[in-house]
Length: 238
Image (cartoon, rainbow, N blue to C red):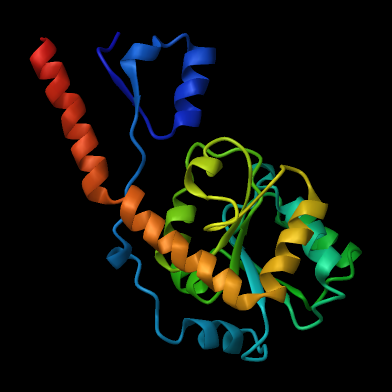
């Protein structure tokens, strides 16, 4: 019924073509854009986060910032963290957000012997400040239409461990801006966390690369220009 449609990721475009019978020539992928200046990092974010939880100022911290639902794959994140916890006894895992899976996640954390190492913060209105204090963002989602949280992490120079599913590989570049792991794979998550914690300078470099990729590939200006170009193409073909 439309002349053109916009998909926010190529993964969504292919899904709609395959399962929605959308004509491929009518559907265009235009990624979201994010101005990094709209996601400022508090200068004391790292220290403030650790102080708020009573943690040492130099301890490594991984975090997930999301709804607590099965889609987000956090059970696998917990199991991956449990694999590296003995090797990094100062490391902690922060989970910011709320949802129906929280009781099961809390039970799993206790089952894995992670009491005191995993912190459930619940729903927060300062998610970006929390993210700015992380050493790495863990997002082992089972699927994502896009995932603005990845752009927010990139704006804050925080490297990302993400599952290699749906739109995530369109945003996160394995070995450059973060780590891509197979879905539902605690072993791979543990290996990525080990690499991030064992070599902090290399992890920070991936975070800096993410900021550059955001500025080069996911700017609001690029999103607007691509959208205007689509509108103009409709005008000329009318």
